[in-house]
Length: 173
Image (cartoon, rainbow, N blue to C red; front, side, top):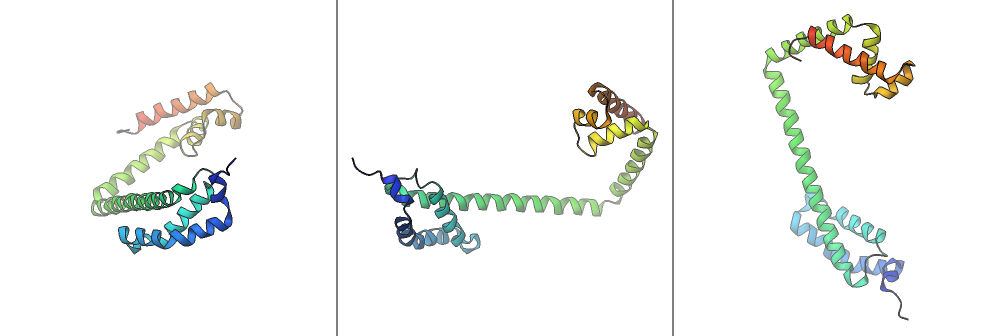
């Protein structure tokens, strides 16, 4: 029976030969297509790491195609990720500009925070504790019930009671 070609790609000597054979061309491909700002050396290394991790699945005849496709996809993913980061940075910058330019917004924010703190102070202690554990700390009703030693329904009643009182106290929620 003939030997399987899949085992050969996992062989270190063959893998080293494949690296020597295709790495320079792969680097040039990424460099010419996307430029140096993507760092083509990293993409070549990542493509070979993926080949090594999938060496049992990739037949010897398809190694070149696998490497070039993988490197290309990795590069496209990085470009897409960079666009998302840039869009987020622009969004944050625009929000800061809007906030900094609008003193009325800052004043309203301070007034709202003061109303919120006053309304929180008017809650019963049990309501305030359950509400803040849920909303500020992000704990689930079940966790709060276990921590306070009460039933889950009691926690729900406290939180929803607190919400009703806060809605009445603060206009605009």
